Amino acid sequence: MRRSYSGYLISIEGIDGSGKSSLAKALAEHLGKKGMSVLLTKEPGGTNLGQALRYLLQTQKKDVCAKAEFLMFAADRAQHFEELIIPALKQGSIIIADRMADSSVAYQGYGRKIGATMISSINEWAMQGIRPDLTLYLRINPEQALARVQARNDKAVWSIEQERYDFWQRVIKGYEEIFSQRTNVITLDAMLSIEQLCQQALPAILKGLA
Image 1: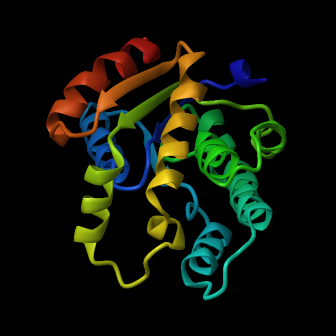
Image 2: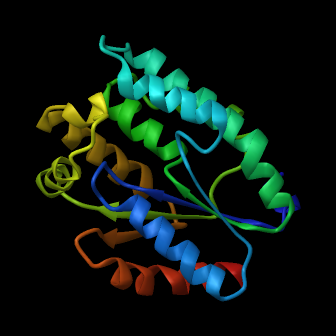
């Protein structure tokens, strides 16, 4: 199914504070300057529904159970693909997504301990069988990442950013295990500057587009 589209889908993954959003924006700017059609988006929040779900997740005063948390992300993902991702792929655009399905496997599957099998199955369904052509994984340790998160001083702090150290260790383990079996993943040192990260990522992107 994916091969019927002329577009190119890139996901950027990593724990909170790894610099995903900054890298996504920088790559979009670099590719845009080359005259390429680029869609910069994110999960959750790439659509109106996603923004509403993001707000709910950010502002819940009571804990949301792990299954409900994942299903909210899955709802956002289904709308995201139907409304934005698939049309952009059909138009031949390069899509750069700040987070995608792997986040749910790492965060809810490993971090929340609800398992990866069902999550992966629902992700496949929500994404209509489409998977990223390339994934950029920003590797960082929890201490460095959380220091960055705290420095943001956001008014609406994700409850997930207040998790204990062992939670983040499980999420990182999840990412490492997920990506160890894939050939379309580039692991990057998140402590490098954004320009250095772009210099490492762009050759792989351009090679994939060739």
